[in-house]
Length: 163
Image (cartoon, rainbow, N blue to C red; front, side, top):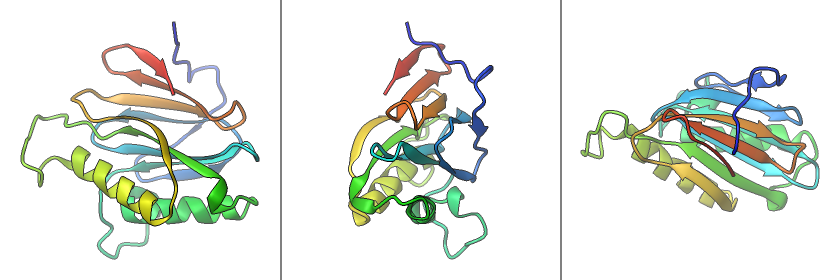
């Protein structure tokens, strides 16, 4: 059985629109339509996590972790500064739920976030190796860059899985 234990783990909490790059554990809690975008460099045991809230920045540059079209670039900058190169990165995605059951694409922010993050990763040629996205349930994520990029996802239903 997989357990989600952010309490007792000295993990950096990534709030909505925030991001972090480093080697220490990171967590984000209460993802609904938002996406936890995680880039990992296995060779250096470092990574970055962004709590992406919306698909497009529309020119806003004040919170680059908030938007799918700016989060990948800001994570890459941070990881480059720590010696990582684009060809050695992989991505994992969590979140993007349709919490309110709207089927209209303009109202389904979760689906739009998933598509926008995929497009941005494709533009940067970063492969997505695992994802737990969509559905109608919220999630929380705990990421360990130094433990081979281990990710534990806890769904609001109480189930936990590893990616």
